[in-house]
Image (cartoon, rainbow, N blue to C red; front, side, top):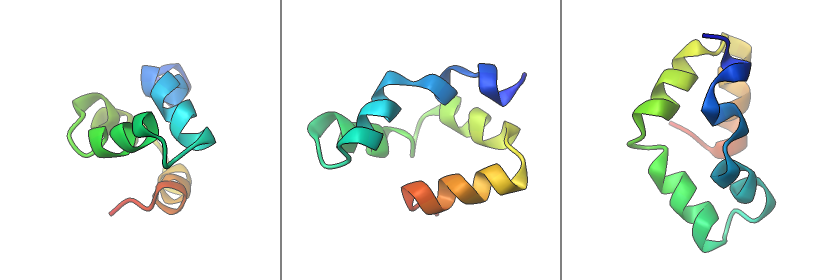
Length: 61
């Protein structure tokens, strides 16, 4: 599957996090990606550069 077509690439909750990371929904999304199998599969589809960008942007790992 193309990462750009994966539902996580255009997730509404993720967009809300990007706008207001400290909001309830933003914090929920950030907590949620630790356990979400969809996010994990999306992350695996990405190339190394894209993974690094997300790691820096969202403070992952």
